[in-house]
Image (cartoon, rainbow, N blue to C red; front, side, top):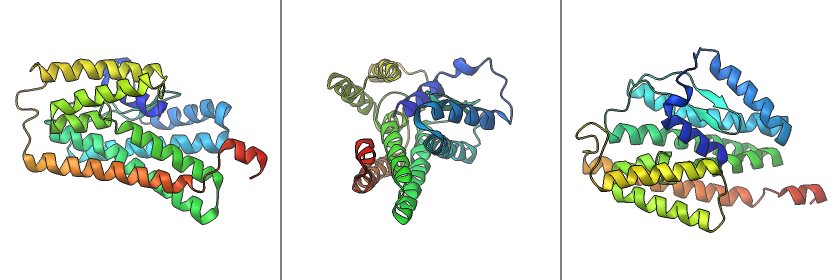
Length: 251
């Protein structure tokens, strides 16, 4: 979940990588570098799997960007932060922004499901663990907070949903469920942006959030359906996934 948070934060703060000269080789180079960094903590198989699932998630965003002809720079992965695709132009309206945001978790969830299916076929604890990681990061990304994928989807439906997301995020911090500083930054920027929208101060072009009721219903249904599918998938996957302690004891 930490990587997903970093992905979104960096995706919305484009100036962080503005000085980099991105090349066609940058995605591959950054993926290899990230795999090496993760391998010191999680071992090579799991590290490569984490990078692969993150890549699938980002590919979902890229596919949606291409569909809407929104130009973007090559993806870059940053160890312990996630990945970023820097767009050269903003989406034309909130509907496009929501679809682009939805594309990442949608394809990312398919990747996690693929790992779960392969795990069931081979009884591989590595694949069960990777499926759990995939379900988790995509669920985390769908939290309706600020610039996270879920926040951008919620913002297209109604500005009050962003405020509710900020309250939910604050509840997670209060309960001790999240301790990552990146999440605190995302929550802070989410509170700021949600507050501006509720007060009528919007930076986007006029009419940016004026999308049809039908579009709001479609993206809402797709959002709820994906969250439900991820929760079910994670629950089923956890029935056969063993904890590290169980693996150490040979259960």
